[in-house]
Image 1 (tube, rainbow over the protein chains, first blue to last red):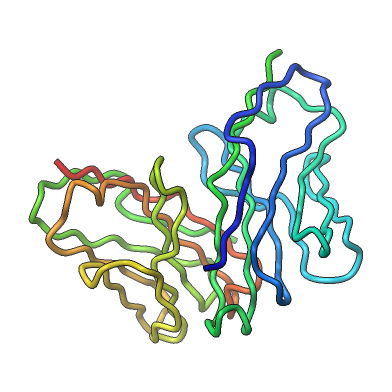
Image 2: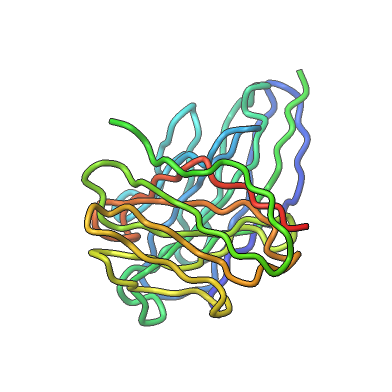
Length: 118
Length: 113
């Protein structure tokens, strides 16, 4: 079955540290890739997405992610984190019309909790 | 433009009861998807509706059902509640397809006692 793996369950960083959160998926066809963020007490918000084109995509709040097709990866990065980045981050994949024959739905990773110490 | 709204925000039920949750998508969005979020299983897809038709369904038992109305509003129903149904139920809408960006609502937190 298709799956999304996020390798880090909980990451703790100090402010100004660099961030990289890993995401790997298991589907070999055409995919749409997403990172969502859930701040404490708030609902899921889209951070960035990749549909096609430049594999390096930039999102809101200084986040970026790189799609490496050969590695089935879509890692999230930020050069310098802030305390306000404390949240849970979810990687998601949507394979479109060919995704296992379905119309497409988001397959989420289990999430990575990021705690940024001030 | 108003975001996705879900009602109620919190709900407490007892085992064996049934529950109905409501979702109003962003104006103009016709695709509505439902997800269950639990600490153990994470976010799992329940089903997706478009033009009042269920287009896609996840691996949940038949106790979980849904429907969509002509104004794109959607409801999901869980019958014969079990303790394990305690979760945050999220609704997401997109313009026509989940392949596009989905916008999530705040969720309904259901506690089954």
